[in-house]
Image 1 (cartoon, rainbow, N blue to C red):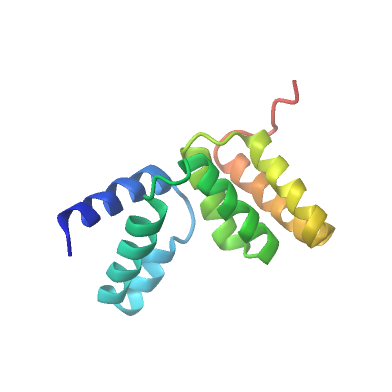
Image 2 (spheres, one colour):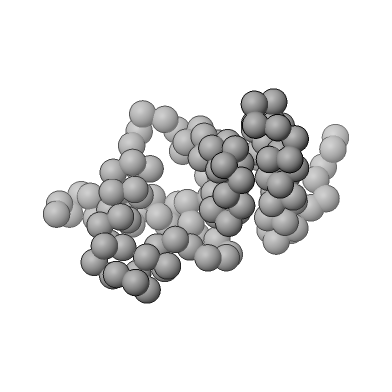
Length: 131
């Protein structure tokens, strides 16, 4: 395994997941299989998330849209926090979720908006500035 991959993994994980509250998938994986957790982390965070083909804010908005569409609220909470960490605004996150509602339906949109509100409260960003 290359030192560069380890470095990219650590840097990207620190960028996305600093100060993230709630369950982090790596910890779940690690509790069952530490070696596999390391391999997943190197692949997902080091090989995929660290790619420079998309800027980090765009990459996180794609993750938020996908997870909102799936109704995967625990993982959505993690990536909403990661999106805020890389500079996506609360208004942009809400807009991504509203866009998802057009294609996946109002119930998926509502679950995602509730999750966004919980994350914004957790981060002291609720209520939003509507100006």
